[in-house]
Amino acid sequence: MFNLKDKLNNFLDELEGVEETEVENEEEGTVSPISDDVKPASIPVTPVEIEPLTIPTTSVNTNTIKPVTLVNAFEVSRGSVITDDVVITGDIVTSAPLQFNGTIKGNIKSSEQVLIHGNVEGNIEGNSAKITASNIIGSIKCDGNVVITDHSEIHGDIYNNSISVDGIINGSIYSKERVRINENAEIYGNVTAASIAIEEGAVVNGNVKINGGRK
Image (tube, rainbow, N blue to C red; front, side, top):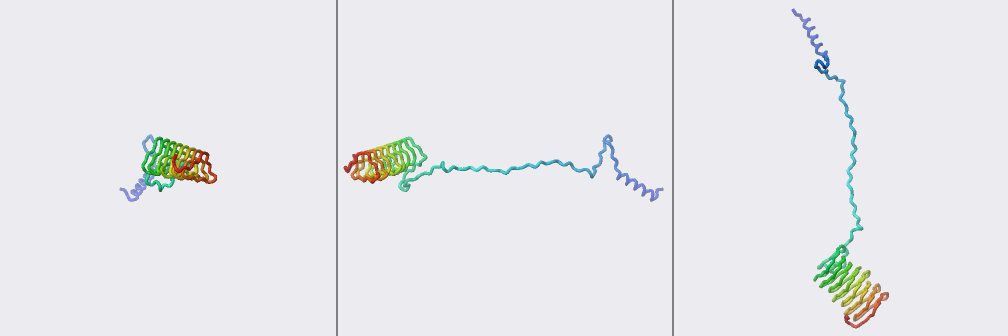
């Protein structure tokens, strides 16, 4: 008959057997228990340097941008303005005021005022004309007044009612009324008008005739 002491000894033996876990080899198909001393493997990580994003800047050379030069723009507000970056081969005919700042190989004709600030290889006709810092190869015919400013050069004859000259004219001038030749003017041709005023310093290389009419 089991007494209490025997039962207690058996329980202690069973408990000791559970704590002593036997490790069998791989041939018997058992797996060794995981020991608390096993540390997880560490994987080396190489840091990656990320370069900051740079946005290229675009610079604009303002020296290559040509400004549009307007000559008395209020006088041609009802008409057309052709800017200095325009090159035309052919004639321009209009019944409105015209301001031309470009380059043309052809004739320009308007029923009203013509303002030229460019290069023209052709004849110019208008009610009146103002030529500023231009090179004209051709004649100019106007029923009204003509103004030729300094730094302009005309290679051709000029027919008008009256004219004021500060530039260079390689041709003759025929005016119904007045001709004013300012000190910066150079004229290589004949001058015919009803009245002529020549300032000191001006150059006139040609005949001067006062007859009150156009030749």
